[in-house]
Image (cartoon, rainbow, N blue to C red; front, side, top):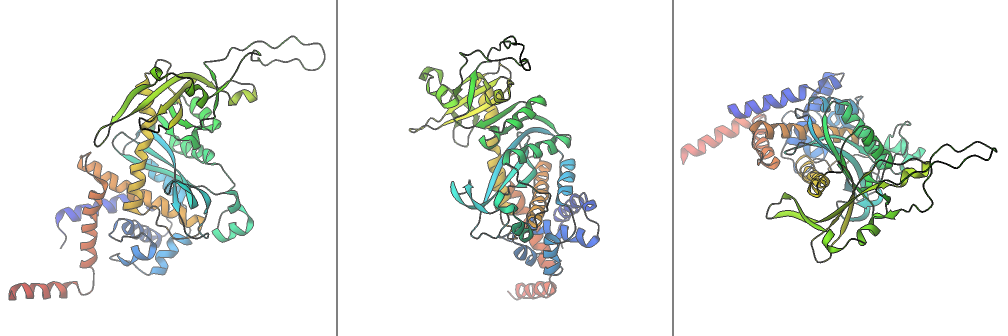
Length: 437
């Protein structure tokens, strides 16, 4: 028999999954959802559908298990909405990021030769844009979209990968903006938004965050052009009486812009201050930083000035230092350490990706269609959130997610063997051997 602790754990899992049952119209689908999430949590090393199904205590048929992901009529987006509503921790920093899934073939939806962060080079892979809530202790996976290169939106590819007609090409920055709006609508208390240059180079996203009065620290490319400070505007010259008179203000002719890397190159060594932003495993994490107030020049193409922000430059302390650049929206009185700490909040996502891939199988999906990918990912997020709840319930910030899952695997493995037809025969035979010895 399962002990009291194991029974309590199974009860909490059932209660958690009941929160998502309204997303399914049939009991058969609800049962399949429970089996799939349990499969993500069980001890199958590979989270392919066949491997998970083989380790379930009450699997049903494999065809039904597969049909639930590939063809059953249910909406993955509705489950994301529900998940964002029931996550217990509501305040934190939003981290925008992309994660890649290396692939050998070309049949998986969204696969293309593109930069693959998992391999650190251009390779055949899928790329997903994700958003997570970082509380300072835990990360909660709250949204994801698969990035679809334009080549995947032809009629032939749409049919093959079951991509709906309404899905159009969207750059990663636009996907991130949609995710941010969805999370904001869910009622989270967002203290700041962070992300790398894939998102920081998107002026539309930065404008939206400004309008929402949200602090942010977004990476930008080294060739980003800025005005130092806020440029002075002058009134347009008087009209000549011919044509429509000018009404928008102008920049003086001597106004200049500068690239982020060019400004950093002009800073003497004394301007680069050594700053530690957090304690690492063996030593404080630190680098050299310098910063100045700037106005991004992109909006001036439309004859309007962007708000003034910080340009933060970071240089590694190693023998071949690499320089990184950020736009940081914090008050003009903010300290250099405050700028550095906010910019480095995004590194919390790396541990989350490792846990999602190593423990839950985020990157193990072998299906080829867009609906299948979307469903696997949202169910992965539901399983991950349950593990985070278990870690939170124990009240131990140092308790690792692999350790929590190891305990869960023991319970599921015991449950698996107990439900086998010959379980009691095995137990009687084992007891007989023990008595003889």
